[in-house]
Image 1 (cartoon, rainbow, N blue to C red):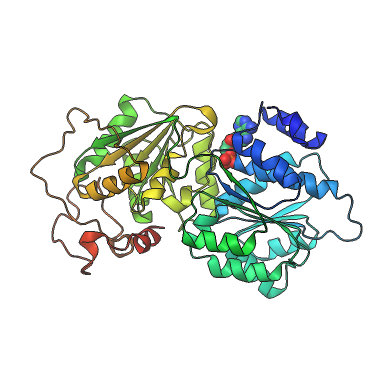
Image 2: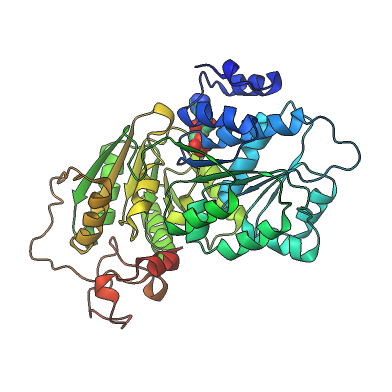
Length: 429
Ligand code: AMP
């Protein structure tokens, strides 16, 4: 199938050609005609499938096809996303694909000045890309009016719910007119998403591109067993011996991300951390430095990495396994994108056996293991509970001599079992 047969306007086909896309991805060939018809969709698609163009292209087409609106510009499309990074990336896609169209957009997220956003919207925009919290602030202040929205997109809806945005989303929905088109994208369809979809969507067309919770086929996955105290040494060894030039490394906690980036820096490997405690400017700079190769290693927490669009990322390392197995699938989805081969390596210490078991159950298969010579795990080392990120910033490996002492610094009885994975992950963000 070619892009020409999807019914998109020539301006959009030109933009697609400028991007060098030869043919639509599966989500694009399925979603674009349906969105052009004006129907609601419920789409199961993860980052890396081309979903952003899948909704952006037909959305732009519909706004344009409705013709000049006359009078003041008003907000006709609203795209809600979970994170600032994703907001910035979607906004960039809107600008890229809509470059030849007389449409204007604004991006709204927290952590940056409020007034410039007010001014941008006041100048008149057709499309708003926003995270729910800051958008709700604008609605509360009367600086944004959503009563004219014709198309609503919820991108990565499952993650928005995971981040506790459901109430904000419901409040925002109450601001929208009843008659509108709704596009809901989500990687998973657990209970709360189903409920939201049922309330929100009108006879939606279901589209599912990658099987739910299955990892991309083009990613080779390996588990490297290693002692917790030797993870950093092993990581530095892998980077050097395998001549990796660009690697995305995941830690469970912000503190762990900072510390690892610092330590690798001291090892002579240019590294930077990206997580929710950094300012927007810092995060943007970190990502830009990584993209242009100024830093070799980007250390990220799950939320910060969600939706990061980095082309052809060859290596992802799980320095620490995530508490929630679905996050593993999201993490390794950062590599092997759009047909490129990718490699995901997980450094797994004895404490993480249960987390590995959870992940393999989700994947419905064992991940092959490879012991790196000289880094064989010491069979005398016993498992220790994984600390809660908020209390002590996570340990998980790398820092010699740290925290080998008593078992219960956090002192709450559930630590050993990791019973409440959710709150732990929250703490990590
Ligand atoms: P997304 O899933 O929207 O985050 O997109 C993942 C990546 O795929 C982005 O870097 C896009 O630029 C790229 N992409 C989107 N559509 C296509 C296409 N039809 N052909 C090749 N690459 C694409």
